[in-house]
Length: 390
Length: 142
Image (cartoon, rainbow over all chains, first blue to last red):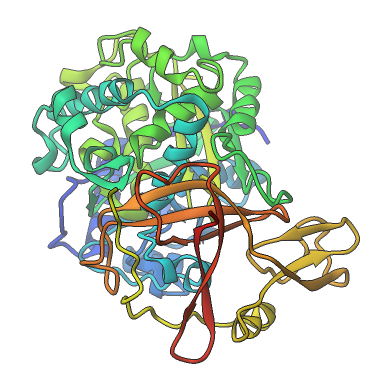
């Protein structure tokens, strides 16, 4: 697979809101219109559609077909990616594969979820038998268990976690599309004194469930060149790992699939962690950011806090972090939320970060986290490295 | 000593049973803890699955009764919960490593906050469900 034979020619994003008044299909239309306006492509030129997971779409076994019908797209390739929070980044990877295979040439990657307004999910999982009977709250409880294990093994450095939370919030203040409720500065003290949800996980560790949509238009490099599009973003490295340690009864939950996925993505891109210009990790809980820094090799396993204390994560700093606020400070658009981190990385490489534009646009690293398994960390980990103009 | 809620008055929803997990649930009627065991690799697995996590095959799986004793692998204090656990916070949710080498999620009850720690030895405490089955909770094995 040659990732770099595809190019992102446009990105779009709706406002993130606590509860959408607008139907999920209309959010999809908003993204489509913005992408057509931006790129000059006509709707009829889009011959691929790849959707992310969506709690609103979860009740429909025909979700991608239905969205295609609502938007009146005639397609050679149509699917939904269902690996949870990984699915926006994974959809981009699958778009490059589909383009490379000749299934289609121009793909709308669409990430739309109105999980708060309309949650149709009825997940069939281990939960009914093995976790729900114990008052398990899902992800917050899972991260409570994970954080306690991390604390036991390495010690949890709460001021380091606070620093990550504060940096992301600074960025949300500069992001007009972030959920308004979250666009208020916080201090390390605010983080440290926020109430416990699943001890040691605090309120300000956690994402706020929201509604919203985002998307990318992806086409072949050849088509992008024919169209004379001078601004493009090219994927140059990708790794994906689902169920790391699947054949072990007990695993160390501080080791995640990002280690192997990251090694693969870095090798493919010919880069190393020190080369990364901006970092847009999937952030459902603050500790996940620190764990990804460790697994991706920015620092050693268990030494994330030291790295955090030494690093300036503001958009003006040495490793800009989730410069739109991430999901924790911009709001989590349901299972489409990974699009928030992804689109921000693309926006920065287009040089359209506005008041939060990073200086170094040589590349951006974007990740995904998807699914909560039984007493481990997360089901799926994805890592994508992007660069402008190939 | 700080006592957390023992959650014993919570009216818990009945867990479903699947074709491949029924032996676990049926054994709980007699307060027996059964685990899937793979003869081919001499290892247990939990939660019950339709195939061996080690080999992908079903034919070497059998059910074996275990003591249920183990130690706390990790724990969290739930300070917010959905119904039917709402207003019963705070309570412990823990992953317990059984002596047979599997992790099992449950509540740890009758355990003061000061006593809880990773590595705490625990034993099963069977909570009756309305249909005659039991849920394995844990208490400190003092």
